[in-house]
Image 1 (cartoon, rainbow, N blue to C red):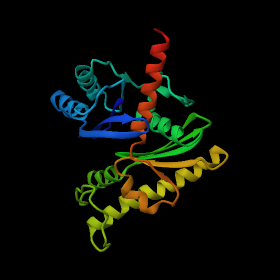
Image 2: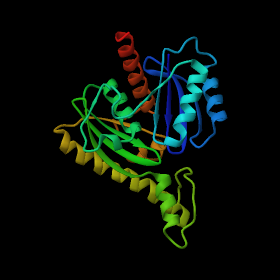
Image 3: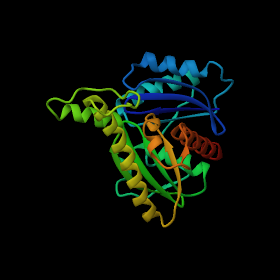
Length: 253
């Protein structure tokens, strides 16, 4: 099995991956201390017979070292910490590859592993990213605020709009809080639809669409049918990268 950790802006997801399936997981806040990271790692390893490789994707550099130490302490393995130079099943073709979030790259690796060579990958998290992979080449895409970020911005940049969390979609429209919640949802869904249409033009066809991320359920009702919903896409991409790294290490021994 492969131990994968996806360190996001708000949450860190620990997972054991067998084949193309996550078999065990744990989630902690990304600003958690080393003790919480170690506890999460131990929790998902409790039922594991063996771990053949490990990999980390992190968009929060201050948390990366704690995660690496937790993995090394629990498994004796030093994980692959993904960056733009890490061998992947895709090639990166953007102006500044070192500035591309590794979560975007890992989700792209998960998508092309599931469905051919080309895909549009939509991740709905703190931010929404819509990325194009054409013939296994990552070409970049679009970044926009996610639902929680939109709500936070409306509060921070106005004098009277309240501070709201991302609760369930409201049923009414006749109060300020509901109006804000609808706005954060529909802005995200509409932006995604327009971004996908724009990237279709760059793709020269109609690639498969993949939807993932912690807030994907928030916008999915407002997106077309037929898009592949894959909650674990980033973790599955991480597992592919870890297997590739382990295979190359074995060949070079």
